[in-house]
Image (cartoon, rainbow, N blue to C red; front, side):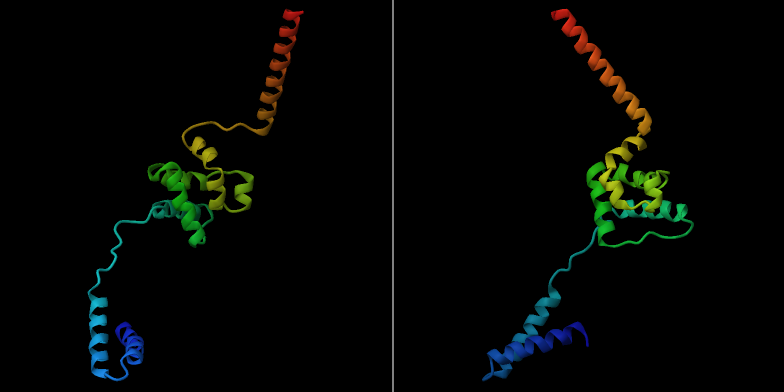
Amino acid sequence: MTKREKHRRILTSIVDHIYTKQPSVGDDLVNAILDAIEDMPRKKKVGTPPGSKVWDSYKEAYTERYLGIEPHRNTTTNVHCKRLVELVGEINAVPLAAFYVRQNDQDLMRDAHPLNYLIAKYQKYNARFQGAVGITSEQSRKVERLGASVTASKNYLEEKHRG
């Protein structure tokens, strides 16, 4: 059954219900409505949706990393790709997605580089992608201890100066 035939059945039953006494008027009305529907302009998709280039980049890097296994694509992954474009712009999002898959972070590898991690930590990965050097947790603790020592020394000197 074609779309037009399906619409004809529905419209005919509606119009028959309304015009039970004048069926010829009903047939004309059904045909007029069907013609109007067919003449309506159709939406045309122009270009690629935001995030599709990001998906292509992510998929290529993922397939390479996981030896031919392709990532699962669904509405959620499409939303993540679109969101990444909104956050960093398409020109940055496309290579960032591939860069992310190439990261050797233990949690990422254990979970097979899910896109939701990239969205949640996009600033971290974008900074690394742009050339920032990450620090280890040990280095972070050293910086924290050094900061505490500097603050303690500063407080000591201020007290000594006042007293």
